[in-house]
Amino acid sequence: MFSSTRTRPKQALPRGGRHARLLPWAAGAAVAVALPLAGCENQPAAAPPDADPEAVTVLVDGPGDPVTEWNGGGDDFPGHPYVPEDVEVSVAHPEFPGAEAFSEALRERIDREVMDFRGASRDPVSLDIAWQVVAAGEGVLGVRLVNTEEDLHGIRRAYATHWYDVATGHTGYATELLADDAALAELNGLVGAALEDHPDVDRRGLLPVMRTYDSMGFNADGDLVVEFDDGHLSPVVEGHPPDASPGRIATVVAAERAEPLLSDLGARARRASLTAEPVLSVPAPGAGPETAPVPPGVVTGRGPDVDCADAGVKCVALTFDDGPVDPTAHVLDILAEEEVTASFFLNGDPLLTRPWLARRIYAEGHEPANHGDLHESLTEHFEPEELPAQVAMVSAAVRRQTGYTVELFRPPFGATDDAVKAEVARQGMAEVMWTLDSEDWTGSDRDAIADRVVGQVEPGSVVLLHDPQPPTVAALPEIIERLRADGYTFVTATQAFDPEPGGTYPPDWDGSW
Image (cartoon, rainbow, N blue to C red):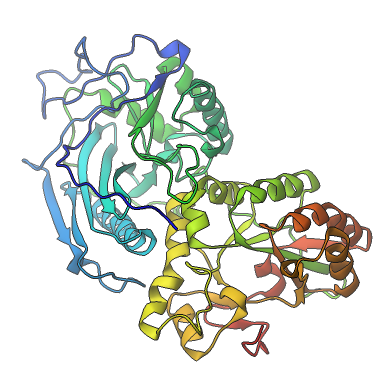
């Protein structure tokens, strides 16, 4: 069980950060905490000599001509899969003349934040989202959103920057300041080196995914500031979400080192953050791209490029239930070494305890999936009105950690009925079971597990395994070796079943286990 602490001190919107470390070449950098709305000359503003180099430059931090503010509360966000009672929601974002598309995109992203806070938090109390303008010029607007949230485990803050390209009307995520995935991977290495000796950081949590690098901006010297949410990089605390008390952690990459990593948008955003005369009214955008670009840090390919409906292809899907736990890391090591893709059906408490493993599952191209919040039979332990929370939790938590929207739900023990099926369908997922039970949960040893899987497999099999079971981890290399030798290709559960939202797979599943 998770432990409980509850405090609710009044806290101001942060501009800089504690417990931050500089890259060696960033020493001496400075940052402007707040710049005037307009200056006498169209040139970069000078940084105060005593400014915090780890703070993102802020040009505007409240409404005023010509920037207005949209405010919303809980009633402005209906239709979410789970809406707990008595949760205080207060959110805001800026609105710029001519940038209506930016306002719409910010509101959509805030809607997801509210939805996922409602779904993923333990006994949520309140969510406040405030804003700052961090760039305005060079055809770019930048907005930093700061979430202050309280739940059973106390108060923590999260940060995200969003970048609007005036010419196209596209709203980019923070990683779109970077040229591509290779640039993000290089940045991830630089940040990891800077945080190598940090006492409050578990560097396993540093993975080049969009939601890890969802807040980046620039200080007044043009250095790239990378900031992380409270607790995002904290070491594991058994039975509790990672400790948020270290607060915001940031690294600073000197301008000359960051410049080769930036996209065109990033280079313009850097210049726009340095301006002494922000451009806050913008023209309407022209025709943008028909499809939005895929941001760096979004993993799109899951599984090999095969068609499991092809009679000439022998597909098998390895699926792992009940994680993420410590052995999940060993499973991922084996899959990486063998170049095998799998599906992981995650539970709520393990996911809150080890969110970095969910990020790793996603980053390495595996399929994150939902195994329910508490590992209890949904048909025996919950009333129908309790099902929305049980189904929503893991999906919300995975999206918070990775940006990925979960598509598959597997009820604990495979126990389902019409009420469970209806709730899974309402939340836009397919119910996915298995066709081959390894019976590793019965206490079988390594050899028995491997023999059972290899002896019963057939093309299209979806294999039930459990990564918390040490014999399963021990059996995995042999399972892979023997199936590969027999011509099998390892795919995800989605590739094996080709499921549609609202369906149950296999279709003849009778709800027994």
